[in-house]
Structures are given as structure tokens and as C-alpha cells.
Image (cartoon, rainbow, N blue to C red; front, side):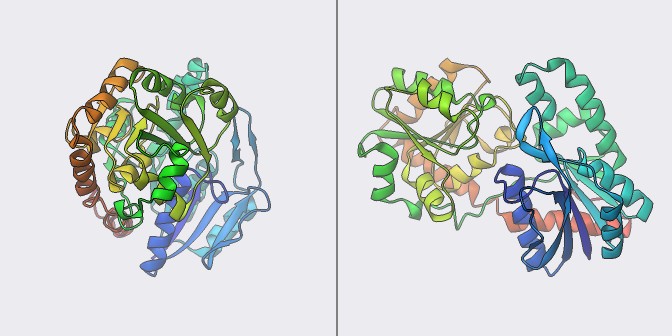
Length: 377
């Protein structure tokens, strides 16, 4: 099997889409499946990934999202993809690279699969460009319906896609590496770093991009209304400076980017994961937190309904419901052993959501489309 992967974002950028893509590429390598990646050129570009070719597309900065690079594939891109001779083309949320790639795949008579990763319409509304929402959904619907089959990351997104006229939507669930994200990575040293030495306080953890749509600023209400809580924020982004000013004078620690062992230890060394985001397609960090043994208090976004059982492994609240968020944190802390029990329940759920199983389902979907069978996911 030979797979052409088209993506709108790639290394060295680090975000949820790139994380899933890297996991997919690693899985394809383990399964001895050849692939090529078509991606916007970021900086000097990445020419290969673990021996597999990366085709760089000339790109420019997207004005409304400066971290995003974009650009259409060229005639040279088409020739390189044709020379690779793929059996199937997978489009990671086709937007510009993917739109051109879809046209290429049709010309090459290659089966096509598109997966949803970014709720761009909601993001534009959050930025104050809500008038663009119908146009974005039209463009999204057109691109996804041009593919032979489409995949959503959660049941909520699947319903949204159906409601907006996208046909033939399957479900490609998200997973977690439960060996990496594991309670055994807890350490007194990391707990001291997260809490500025106040290790006996309740440490609330946020991990993710620091941007306005994540509504991180609302977490200040928890710090002021729930005694004994401290907040550790892991990640970076355009809102960091404003957030540091907003949380000045509160027990909040900005950790910046953490990776690998440091990130796993940060998850495992905290007490509760808090996630007030206004929009997500899945919320990969939620299941990573659960695998680390943390109950989660989160907005009802992305894949939350697929993961969170109220009072069992976490609490969910509506977007913008500050009282619901505060009450969720209070509920986790309400009894001496409750947080530990909910953390164990979170871990047990995460252990059933392994990445290899999710990726094998995707590879089976590739095979179904190549052979002309109806996809099984």
C-alpha cells in the first residue's frame, strides 16, 4: 500500500493536527506502508520524515492566523505525487493544499479520503468574522464531498458535518499512548515546579495553545472562588502576554512549552485538568490528561461526550458557563478521596483508547477504499 498524505500544517509546527499526523506516520512506518507527505513549506522546510519523502509546497502566512502557512500545490507537486504512484490519497482537513491535491488525485484516478481536524467556521466567528461562517461551511462541504469518504473525530463533529450537508461521514476516533501518558511519571520535583513550591495546594493544569478561543482567562474565577487551588499553564501562543498580565497576582505558573518526559511528568504531577475552550474538534489533551490519572473539568466541546462521564471521570459544562466550571472543580475536591477515585476511572477509560487500535481502523479504511468496499468505520 502506498499513501499520499496532504496536510495544511506540518513540522516543525507543533499543534493537535501535527501530533495526530506524526502518530499516523509512525504507525504507517511500523506497518511497512510507504507514504509521501505534501505540506506547506515552513521555514527551511522538512525534506523527509524517518526516511519518507516530504514534498514542500511554497507557502505564505495566513493573515487571520499568523502561525498558519498556506499555499496551493504546483505543477511540480503534481509530477512528484504522480511519480510516487499512490494507491490512496488522505487529506488532513483539505483547505488549500488539500483542494489542489483532490484535483490531482481525481486526475490520477486515486481513491480519496478526507478527515476533519479544524472547526475553521467557529474559529472565524470567535475572531469576529462570523459573516464568513456560511462561506467557510460551503467551502468545507464542497471539499469534503469531493472526497470518496470523510471521517470525523467525534460524534459531535460527525453530526455537525451531516447537518451542514457533508455526506458519507465515518468516525475516526482519537487515542492516546497510555504508556507515555501515565501516572508513574508523577514527580515531587515537577509538582514543585508547577506550584512554585506549594506542593500541598491543589494544582489545576491547562495544556494547549495560548489563544483567545481557549478562554483560559476564565480560569481566574476558579482561583478566586475555590481556596487552595493553583494553576499551571503549559504551552505558548499569541495570547501569552495578555494572559500573564491577566493572572498577575494570582497563584499561576506559566511553564511554556514542555515536551516528552517533561510533559508527561507535568500531566501526572498535577491534580485536575481544566479545559475551558470554546471550540475543539476533539480535544486530544483531555484524553492525555485522563491517561495520566487526572479527572477533567471541561467545556462540552469536541469529543467530550465520547470521553467524560459526569461524576465518574470528570465534569463537563457549557461554553461560557463560569459557574459550571467552578462547581466542577469544587465537586472534584469535595471529598478527600474523590479526586483519586475519579483519576483512576479516567485512567481506566484511557487504557481502552490506544492509538494503534485507532490507526489500524484507519488503515483498514484505506484498504476498503482501495478495493472498492464500503468503509467499515
